[in-house]
Amino acid sequence: MLMELETSEGVEESEKQRSAPKRETPSRMADLSELLKEGTKEAHDRAENTQFVKDFLKGNIKKELFKLATTALYFTYSALEEEMDRNQHHPAFAPLYFPMELHRKEALIKDMEYFFGEDWEKQVQCSEATQKYVERIHHVGQNEPELLVAHAYTRYMGDLSGGQVLKKVAQRALKLPSTGEGTQFYLFENVDNAQQFKQFYRARMNALDLNLKTKEKIVEEANRAFEYNMQVFNELDQAGSLLAKEIVEDGLPVHNGKGDVRKCPYYTANQDKGRSCISRALLLGQVCQHSH
Image 1 (cartoon, rainbow, N blue to C red):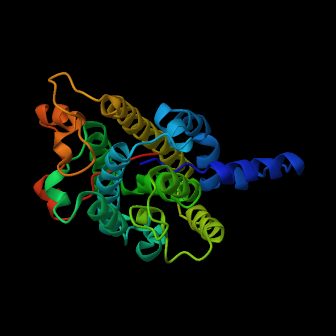
Image 2: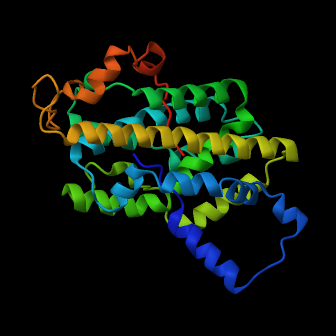
């Protein structure tokens, strides 16, 4: 479920900057894309160094855990895209509304059907950490829509970068079909050139009519999004530890990745807490949001 961080791109850009140092003009430093890049560097690095992310990049991930990660992504993007749809005409977000190019919910539904079967909605629920992220996304979309760009930037720009590396890692580690089943999330069929689209998206971000105070709030919200993502990663890491055990405490076999995911000890624990994202609002299309 990785928050696909802009790893490769960040390296390329930093190398270019070292080899050809440029003096940043005040106007360039006030660009929202630059403020976000600089202002989230530390959080970005911390997220990259969570155990779940490091294990994933090494190909050390089991199908059961990947299914849980995909579930978290489904709820996250459902929430995010519901709020983006709600605010598609808001002046602080409208220029960044690209449902055909970016939206991931429909792709994630295909992945959920592949992993869980046609009745997947009856088998899954939103985890505790993902639920908190989702709630924040809905709060922003409904009360502070000018901050929605922080969540869109954090997710989609990374998906177009490191996400493509993660797709190959997942296909290799989990022996998934090269034809894309189970990894539709990473496929952006309506984006011909990811690098060019990211540049275009950043230009749109920089053209938003926002004062410096609002831009700083957006950077703060992006850092908050990274924190939510790290909480989801840590939760997945804990789930991975449980799933790695051959036998759970009560002597029942651990969930084998087939059938009802609620038999997984991770979800059983959360069920006991009454944590569920399958609310009436979600069933109407609301998105249970996710990460950095």
